[in-house]
Length: 271
Ligand SMILES: Nc1ncnc2c1ncn2[C@@H]1O[C@H](COP(=O)(O)OP(=O)(O)OP(=O)(O)O)[C@@H](O)[C@H]1O
Ligand SMILES: [Mg+2]
Image (cartoon, rainbow, N blue to C red; front, side, top):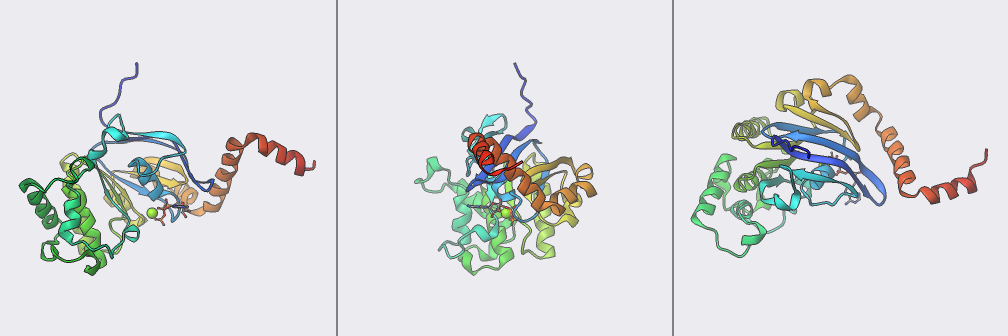
């Protein structure tokens, strides 16, 4: 019998995801401890958003599986909160700051209930924590970029989850807001929350995170910041991007279509 480790918050085993047969994640495998601030970094298109969506069960991987606190995803959905990448949100959607943050209180099972006093209190407190109280009735489309970013942060706070996935929460915010968000994250960590943050600013990685996952389709490295951010690793992630992708593409084709691959070779390859 294997003894499960209760301090593991998120584990991914052999995750492969492809869009149109082009792999964007390849055999991604790691265990992330609870109660830490963890960064996911890698170049544009390296699969960071795809990984987060897979970890949350929004995307089903082509192979592999995810466990959260040693349970399959569907058992623990209410423990997970998500702050989406800003570009992926429809900002014309007619909803106020208050409405969006209230959505954090409504899981599928209580969708048609009225908000309780407690729901309303938590929503107001969450809005206050991100400094948006003056804008509480404002339509989200009429906020600045940095304010919009904080609306979804407040929605995730309102969820009172255990694990927070945030996709580039610092993009488009000014220095003061960045500091405020980081302070909030550190407070959440002190309360035992696990924060998994997609981040693209290499300059601040070592300052912000306890551990970092360096991704480029594959896991280049994962662990404490100082062991991961080496020249060789960064070169592997950022320098040889085309190389990595084409090699993985080859592997994928071989494993998925072994027979056809052979036929193809027989027909075309002359030695
Ligand atoms: N729905 C989709 N259909 C087809 N391809 C997709 C889809 N979503 C993402 N991709 C492709 O998958 C790859 C990984 O995308 P992903 O959004 O995960 O990258 P990312 O690391 O989050 O990039 P960024 O830093 O730009 O946010 C990209 O090449 C992207 O074009
Ligand atoms: Mg992304």
